[in-house]
Image 1 (cartoon, one colour):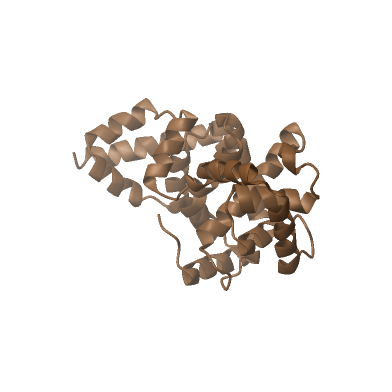
Image 2 (cartoon, rainbow, N blue to C red):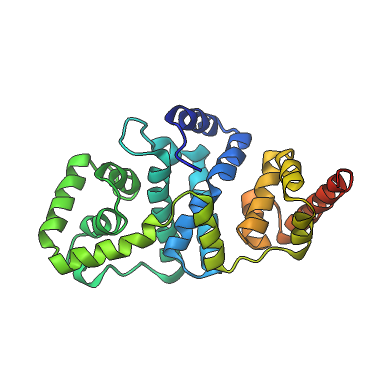
Length: 269
């Protein structure tokens, strides 16, 4: 999926701020792959990436998606790029809670906390100054564009040519997180996501008809199937995302959807 038009994003964000649960389900359906990509950029372990994904979703949904409301359509760059930077930042927050604060790169330890984050976002992840400001604003209250630019200039003055090359070489990991089907398939392979055998049987019976049947489902059901079968999230990881009380409730819902799809396909195959 390519970048979402600004007006479309604005309408969706307005619905989120109004507290629409339907809007949140739509947001997850459209951007869950991007958020999972961001989580996997920070966490290479499958379970840790799933936990980081849940953390990202919880923080983005907190207080009627107040963090998403900070997106400025007037800034250069797409919403996808901005959201990716914010999600990576949140995934790092999740990791800090799990294993302690991430140690900065060895050559950046002498820098200030702001400069260390600028190294990560500007020079390692390749974010623009505007995207860096948006990602760091919650972490550094009152941060201005001028302060980000000044920190970036200080960082640039301290980096050697060898360090610059090393950071650019690491950037490829971030740039691979494109919001495309090919990137999603690479991520699924990297995380070792396995398809459910029942799902594979249904898919072999007729992919086009299956796709049509899934498209007819409510958005929250489509999201549930995508997270479980396409993204390989565990039942426990999905429970807080879909509002279930426990993994068993998610399992029953998934089994019910599979049975529903099987019944629908039995009439058309």
